[in-house]
Length: 399
Ligand SMILES: [Zn+2]
Image 1 (cartoon, rainbow, N blue to C red):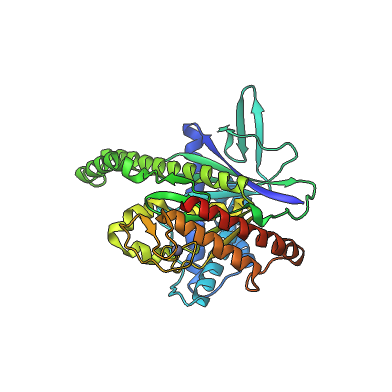
Image 2: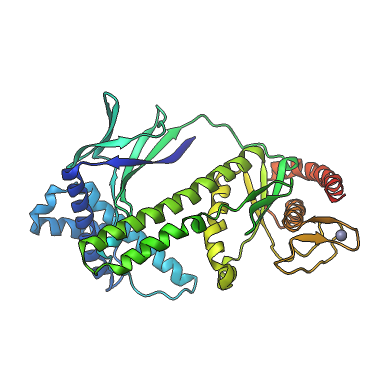
């Protein structure tokens, strides 16, 4: 079995190398925009692009200073962009034609197949890129020994840091289909008060990274707006602002990775609500904290880490009583679920997570969820056992 993995490492180019990297971006953008111009007259294939590229090179011989595989990767990029556009218009989105890319928006180039090498000299790790040279790279984690490097994508962050994304193929012995036990499943409710509240009763408070950093962010935003447009001092302030933005994004990512890893390690199956974020962000009073919580990105991480992630119907998960199914309507401010039919008193989010778990388990045994046949036979028996266990658990929590 061959696994494809990406490793993102920080690069430390010297002044000359940084200039060369910047030139690479500029050239790729120039070619990209040239292709965009051509697409205005209709679809151009990757072969067309590469053919055009050789023609351009014959006229502009200075292009030979640049790694040819890198220039060709722009063809692939244009091809992808065109296909994505067609896909969108098929889904009835409003689409125009491809747009030209602005200087500050073009921040990545690709070396595929050749022109790169990872080396070690003494204690420093180096990334060799053809036409650029050896750059210092910080390996904050080890790439497996038998890994075969496929490509290197170099990216410049908005605050001016350089990163190398290394794609490797790792050959591993085939383990077979992972064994999934529905006994080992959990329901997760995501919310504003606690970021996650699961059916086992655990909750993780919302870190509110944006709000913590709001003060320095506001300060630097004021600074930027005070400075004269186009001035060097404004540019410096903008870079500082971007660094703060990146820090917030990093804190958020780190937090989400830690929690999602925990759930993926401890559970075979994770059930979540199908989120309808577009509606929620429309609610302005909540919009900022929702954007800050960014559950979508969290669920995406769960999706690729878990053995199985199932999204259930979100209707009435907060209203239904998780023990008797009685409907208990409540406003957002009411934090406790009180059922006057079965006397269940439970944290609002905990009740919701139990509903999500129950719904998920019902769905998994039903016909509308497609499981591989060999798994389904095991799970039918197991999930019946589980729902019994669940009832006992609910009673314990309720009293
Ligand atoms: Zn009830």
